Image (cartoon, rainbow, N blue to C red; front, side, top):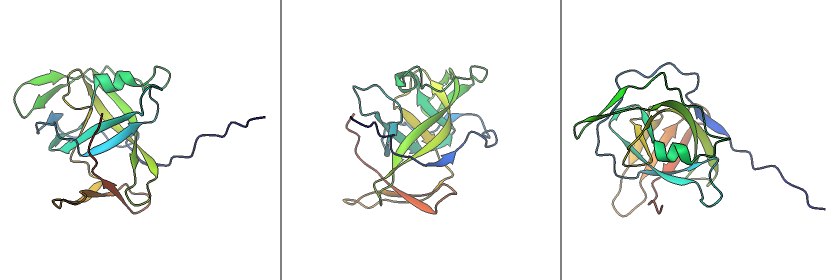
Length: 173
């Protein structure tokens, strides 16, 4: 008789659910087309590995594309608060009205241990975002090291287990 094992435990290292409201008008002050991190949806269609690219650059707020948001299966998709639909300004000019906000859980990989961990971000859902997710100057990134020909590493402090290192990886999605 086969025994179904529970899924592996994935710790939550950062959660914006109960943090104060974000300050400043939401804005993306970057062309937002370069992938800095690969993340994974915890729940995704079985035909994918759930991976997606994240751009980290100047601006105010976290943003998720509506396409990525809608790719989360209905039974696991976080609710969309449509009471908050501000205009999001873009560095290249123009703006887009957010469809609402949500708290989206994403999985990242610790570069030193290879283990996955979860962070939960408050994000504006945008109808046309050039990249699946955009994170503006997260306060949890303490230091980034860029060295041509070597791994680019982000040292992150999620306020839980000391410094966690994230390695930039090329997106193959």
